[in-house]
Image (cartoon, rainbow, N blue to C red; front, side, top):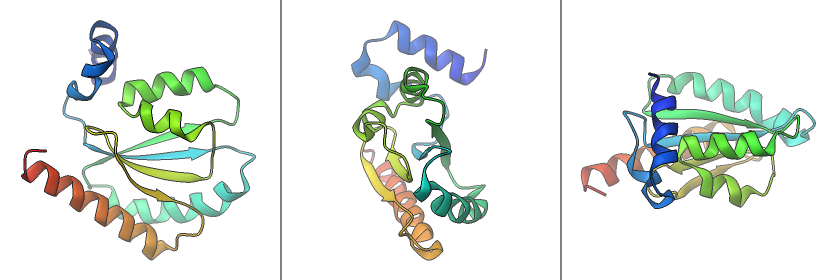
Length: 141
């Protein structure tokens, strides 16, 4: 049985408050891209973000795309629950054109990357978020 399917089954069987505690070997840091085909800022941010992310292929983070191009808000909300980032997803209110770096265990948004970020800014945000996660894990948080 796949990890995501198993996690989804646990989500159904466990109360919502237990959502943060059922991660099965998944990275704690989530880089969630909120995009749409019609989004102008997405067209600026995405190529820059994708180029930088190539350098982070081995990093302990999970990449998630929430593509609202076709108005699948219900399916996207379900995906957010499965990924353990539903609080951050709901806070976006359907907005697009940014990346959130989210601590899956706490729900904290560690950075919001927008089209105003240069390649160096994106790297800086990723490096900082990875360090925050490493520090939290080292202290047992």
